[in-house]
Amino acid sequence: MPSHNIAFIGGGNMARSLIGGLIARGVAAVNMSVADPLESQLELLRQQFGVRVSSSNAEAVANSDVVVLAVKPQEMRNVVTGLAPALAHRPVIISVAAGIRASDIRRWAGGIPVVRCMPNRPALQGCGMTGLFATDDVTEAGRQLAADILGAVGATLWLEHESQMDVVTAVSGSGPAYFFLLIEMLETAGITLGLPADMSHQLAVETAYGSGRMAREATEPAAVLRQQVTSKGGTTAAALDVLERGNVRATFAAAIAAAAARSAQLADEFGA
Ligand SMILES: NC(=O)c1ccc[n+]([C@@H]2O[C@H](COP(=O)([O-])OP(=O)(O)OC[C@H]3O[C@@H](n4cnc5c(N)ncnc54)[C@H](OP(=O)(O)O)[C@@H]3O)[C@@H](O)[C@H]2O)c1
Image (cartoon, rainbow, N blue to C red):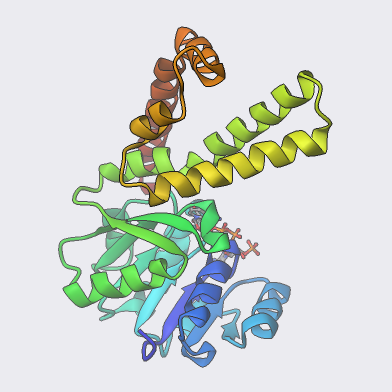
């Protein structure tokens, strides 16, 4: 990967975190170029990372062998269509846009192989989770390159079918919001029961962090970890009993299904 020239179209949050992650992994800043319409954004990227910048998408991709599309989903069609002549003969293009199908990007780009990626917000902290899907014509080298680039900001997972991307979007793409909601609810409950807000915040956040680490490092499934921290007749059991009687599982299942359905609907809207 260090020898590749990587062009980013769109120099916002996701491009910035990928560039930071790649530099930390030894990719030279001079091997990366970024295009964005906003001069101040480009100046920031140049100062922070020393990457090459341009307000022209075609100029940014000119000497690159891999292109990462990091614009908002609603911009994607225009950007790819406008860039199609400059993209000709690329071995692969990578998209991180939520809800835009690889097959649509491939068509807009004039038949270039595409890897579609669905990262999540913690990628900005270097601990993201990204699902990847490749069109049939992506080579092994193209797949490796995409996994290396997204792997610079966290864990990666290949999907066999693009339809699985809607589930990835619902589980890990939207997932941080569910955990933030849980933290928020824990904090509020702590305050309601008499703790100062800052104390309640620290208790909730550190517990979320510690539980995430435990689940990540454990060999047992989450259900077993939960049983291990729940003594019969104890405090945790009292809380879980209320949650189960409140149908938390059914509510959560319905929520994730709604997110997956919305993801499919957005892909239809943007790809139309
Ligand atoms: N951030 C996340 O947590 C996250 C998670 C998963 C997936 N993603 C995906 O990553 C993509 C980028 O998200 P982001 O959070 O990085 O958004 P962002 O911060 O808004 O960055 C997008 C950048 O693209 C620029 N842009 C707009 N039109 C352009 C054009 N025609 N040519 C070149 N650049 C253009 C924007 O400039 P202006 O600001 O001047 O319009 C902006 O700087 C999105 O498709 C999103 O779905 C993001």
